[in-house]
Image 1 (cartoon, rainbow, N blue to C red):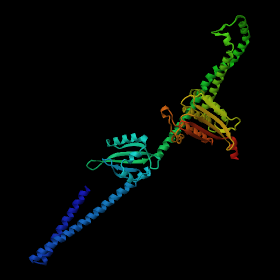
Image 2: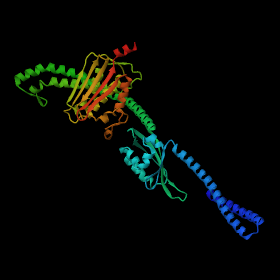
Image 3: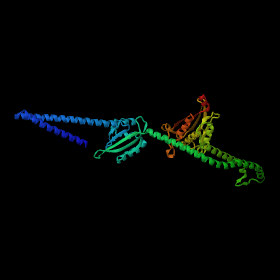
Image 4: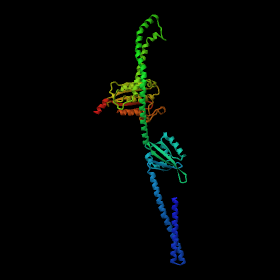
Length: 464
């Protein structure tokens, strides 16, 4: 509308100038001469001069319009080029009409590279997110409403970048579709904060679960300990009764020959009863050890890590807790624990949690029961630290996986319920104790986890 008004104004000015020129020149010419030949020449010059005046007026108007157009174009170019987000306009043929320089900050590639290679964006989308991106681009060509999606790209420098993508169709004044306008924002930090928040919630949930488990275990332990006490107290009485009656049964056997005691022959049973009673006693003691270990593991841990922890005791408790799992997975579980080591200052429960996690990971890597797990502990006099090693000859890990095993939520066991939090939490516990946790692995050959914790002797030395 404004453009139309401008053109009408120009035409009116042109008509007015032409009318004034004709009236003024005719009046002047009539006053100057009455010679017919001279009048014809003056009329000719009048027309030529009017053409030059018209051309000059059109030139001035054109220049003004061009300057205004250039100014508007520059204004919108600056507005587009200096957007913080990565903006682009994709035409109906899938070619970039425009792409903002911010693409270089986010992707590492320049606008000219994207303009010269329309498929570059598709190629830098992370392989795991390709399907999401392709499905979105197919939907956005159908839907007129704004659509959004989040995906990862691989930057030029090889780093991963999370992108928040929003796009919608664009139309001209006649409602003809001109393509798609999209905006990409770097949301890597936001994703990082979300993952950290999720991890904190997972840790809180885990702590709450441990509190609940502690309450349940305490109740179950009481119920289990009562009948277990009957076993441990009555077994010695049975043994004493058996030894007291055996001389009488031996005399009867000598005089009358073999006889049945229940459904067993006395000659067979005579040498087995003590073994059976030993098995009952050992089983009852094992039940008590398991219940005690469960109570210690599930008990809510105080915020102050002020316990003097005997590492070998922790290792033995962890093995007791995992006794059933160990027997199911391997026949070759070996321990080599150095005696008389200094103690560690910290939380017994939390260190035990770390050891359990390392043993469980080793067990899960074994393909059959002939595979070996070796657990050892020793005191390193060189740096005054207690070193614990859990080594297996299981499936092992590739270098790529090894680099990421301490990353929160990274797991190769997602399909079996893995959360990717076990080792990150274990590593956090180790760091809280001033120690270190490292891994060495080779595909098909196995993995060695090395846990190093400063002893109280070392801590006291550094404090003074």
